[in-house]
Amino acid sequence: RKIIKEARAAVEEAQKSEEPVTNNVAGVIPPPKLHFVSVAAPANLSPVQVETIKLVAQFTALDGKGGPFFQQLTNREWTNPLFAFIQPRHGHFAYFSALVDAYRMMMSTWTNKDKESDMSILPVAELAGNVDKCLEVAAYRAEYDRDVAERRRQEMEGNELAGAAHIYWYDFVG
Image (cartoon, rainbow, N blue to C red; front, side, top):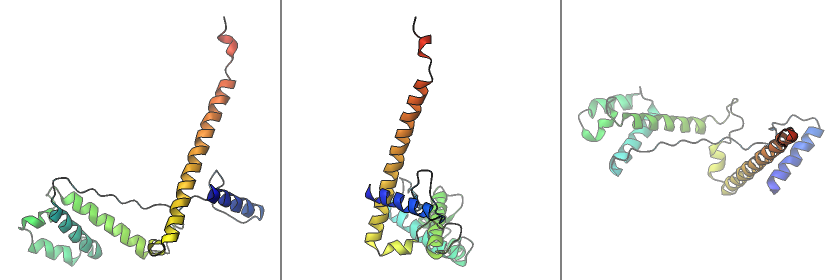
């Protein structure tokens, strides 16, 4: 709660001094966006197959799907059952493609730290070596989410009471 109160105080001070501040309706600066990338491996894959697909997806993401690595690997290992997933008609090609896309997205967030369109995203490299900063961001996010949930609950209770006040109760009395 202390972090949220400090953030509110900072927003109020900034508003008094006429400085532009990015804030939401509650008057609290929202935490930075999270990058969730979740690609679940199919259940029928062995651990060796999963590791092979992940490794090939990493190298393909570095080079691109149209790059020489993927082309040469496809030509060389077309008949190898361990690399059958690189064939577009194979059942695990979708998993492989999703991994390549996820790795490309993560690499772009690591390399494009100075994007003008996503100023609210904390650079991953900034948090990578700083445990205290990671814990601070996580604590702020938890406080923010708790505060937003509490405000929504209070707003819902207020709406219910306001709705009850508008009912003409004498219609129900005989």
